[in-house]
Each structure stands twice: as C-alpha cells, then as structure tokens.
Image (cartoon, rainbow, N blue to C red; front, side, top):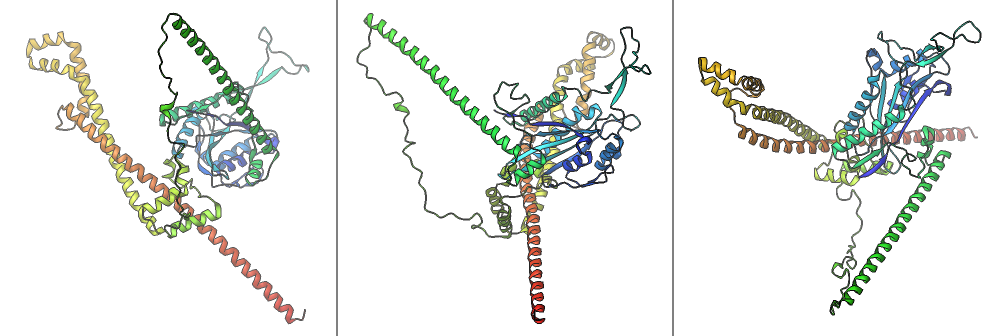
Length: 565
C-alpha cells in the first residue's frame, strides 16, 4: 500500500491585504461575479477545470444565500472595517483515482459534518487541473463564513465583551476610572488554534475510509514530515500568479525554491536508501560470519567424533535456478511505424488528430458529463490509443454514427438500470423474508399446537407458553408483511431465487458499467469536437482578417500609385 501525504492549506481572506470574498468565490466557482462593496467585476482566468460547485447552508440561513453572489455580497457589505476578516478558505488534494461522483459525495459529507453542522455557510468547488505533462490534480476549494447566523436569518457577532473580574467577582476599573476592564471573547470555537489540524485529520480519515471501501491501496497521512521524524522539507505554496507563470514555462522565485527543496529531498532519500543498503549488507555479513563460525565449529566437532561425511560432491548453489531469460532476445520486425490514424480514416479520428496537433492531448469535459463523473480511471479514458480502439471497435466512422451509438447505449443503460433496481428490490425482500422466517420458524410448532387446542386446554397451554406465543406473534408480523399474496413458506426456493437474481443483477450491473464507460467516451468525443470546431472557427476568422488587411493594403497602395505618390 502506497502512502500519500495530505496537502491542505487553510487561510483567511483579509480586506487589509486587498482581498475580496466575492473575488475568491468567483475564482473557485469559475463564474463572473460583481462585488457591491467595491463595484468591481471579477472574472476567472480559467474555467475548464471545474468539476462541481455548490453551497451548503446551516439552520436559519435564508434560502437566497444559495445564490453565490447574494451570499458573499452579504458578507462583504456586513463587514464595515477596512481590516475586516471576510471568510476562511481551504484548498485540499483528493485522490486522482476517485471518480468525480465519489469526490462530490465525499466532500459534501466532509463539509456537512465539520462545518455546516457547526453553523457555517459553506461554498465549495471541485477542480481537476492538468499540467503540461498530462498529470491530473483533483482537489477542492472551500470557503467558510466567519459569523454565525441568528434565528432571524441575520449575521451574528463574531465576538462578545467579557468583563475582567477580581478575586471577589467584582468588575475592575480601568485606568481612566470611567469604565471597566474587559476583553473580547469569540462567540464560538471556529477560530481555535487546533482546528486546522483537527479538520486536516478528519479529511485524511475520511479519505482512508473511502479508499478502504472502494479497495484503493492508498493510505493518506495527515501528520507533517517533522511529526513523522522525516528529514524531508515541505514545498512552498506557489499561489495563483506564480502557478500561472510556471505553467507558461516562466521560472519564478518560489518555483526555483521548490525545485531546490525537491532536489534536496531526493538527495536525502538517496542517502537514506544507500544507508539502508549498507546497513543491511553489514547485518547480512555479520549473520554470514556467525553461520560460517557455527558451521566450522560443527565440522570440527564431527571430525573429532569421527563422523565426517564421505566424498560427497559439492553442488553449485543456484545451479538449478539458472534460466535462459538473459539469452533470449526480443525479435523486432522491420515494419515501419504507422500513424495512429493511418488504419482508419474517418471524420471522428480526423478530429482527434486535429486536437492532438493543436494541443498535444485530449480535453476532458467536466460539467455536462454525467457518465464521465462515474469513471474513476480518467487517465485511461483520455489515452489516445484507448480512444482510437474504442472508435474502431464500435465502428464509429462519423459523428452521425456516434450519436446513433449514443442513443443505443442510453437505451441499454436505462434497461440495465431498471432491471438492477427491480432485481435489487426483490433480492432485498427475499433476504429480509428469509431472515424474518428464520427467526419465526422455531415458534411455528408452538403456535400451531396452541391453535389446535380448544377451551380450557388452550388456556392452560397459553399460560405455560405465554412468552413463546407472544414472541411468535411479534415475529409473525414482519414475515406476513413481506409475503406476497398466495406466497407460501418456501425457504429453499427463496434461496434459489436469491442466487438466480443475484447472478442476473451482477450481469446487468456489468452491462450498466459498460454502457456508462461507452457513454463517457461519447461525452469525451463530443466535447473535443466542440473545441475543434471553435479552433477551426477562430482560425478561419483569423485568416479572413488577414485577407481583409492585405486587401486594404493593396487598395491603399493602388490609390497612392494613382495619386503619383
């Protein structure tokens, strides 16, 4: 199991630093927002990495705050001070092997438990950015309000005044003598020093529980390198400006510092590796010397006792384990390399070729892609060889054929989902019925015997078996609630039905999964087609403007010639 060190960053948006809550909300939601406090319009620089965004509100918060612009403008306008603290933010990494759907479910649960349930308004978004090497970075941003919400739906106070008392419980006069000494006390525990560590630990615990549930062999560690006793140095946070410059290939001071830190850490890791190798070698040498000394002592004792073995030929150690792997050479054919798209020329593959030529990689749809959200291995989905194989195997030679294929897969997926829902309900009913009947079955003979008796004999039997008959009555209710009309007690038949239905359920689940993956490929192809059409349109417009500019230049040149200039 591999270990991943959690990456989290808590911070406070402060007006004294020229920061804005509306600006931060615009950034994480990739939407255009207007601030009523400073009158500025904030436009995000990026939008293609947005996977999901939503707002969660606590009790008493008005529904209108579900509108991002209303919520954060309300926060901004409520804070009057020029050095006001506006909100708390968190940026945290998520496992790249998670599906988008699973990431949404997990982040929503984490936010609800740790923040919304405590009274904070939460605005969060999931991003999946891709670097120049095509490596994904699934992470989420979270914005939290700092004021509680009163029962009337208004913002409450962050702090309250508390008078300082003497040993007798009386107020203490201040130096001026006109008032009393006091201090500001937080109205809640949201600003406690250990919260960031507590929230970080809860996030890693949540990730580890989910990883264990889905069978992902990855353990997330919340403790720092220092706490773990590691000599590694953590890298520094780049920030949006330095990150943007680094993405463009422009070196920054922070980027250079991180590269130096990573090089230093790699040197430490190599030194630790060589140290471990040397230490193990010394230990193995000591063990070998001890074994040789013990063997020599044993041989000497046997020789002295006259028990030395005869002329037994020594064997070459490991002789039987020699293989011909080293002598086998892989035969390489002299076939020429074939282009990815040489085998089949169609408009879908030609579109992909244009995208690769323009960007070097495929683009991933994030928002309007319900099927892609269910796929966890997005790297495999974006692999050009896999996309090519998909197009060829499904016989998709045009975008019309792609849409026809999509309709077929939607129908197949819907049918599989309906069968799974139907069989799933029946499997649950039969399992509950089997369990209820298993609990009721031991009391059936007692109840039947009671019903067969009449009069005084029945009354006597009831007094002797009152507890068993009452239990039978209670256990009989769920059994008959689950039994269908005309259905009899047939536990063996139920068991056979459960087995048969489970096999069909698993078959349809696989069918549903295949259709989902196929539709995810369809969404990928549709998205890249839109990008290709947009690029082609921009290219045509650029060429048109160039031609117009050349024509105007020629006309001006002709006019100057006519005027004799």
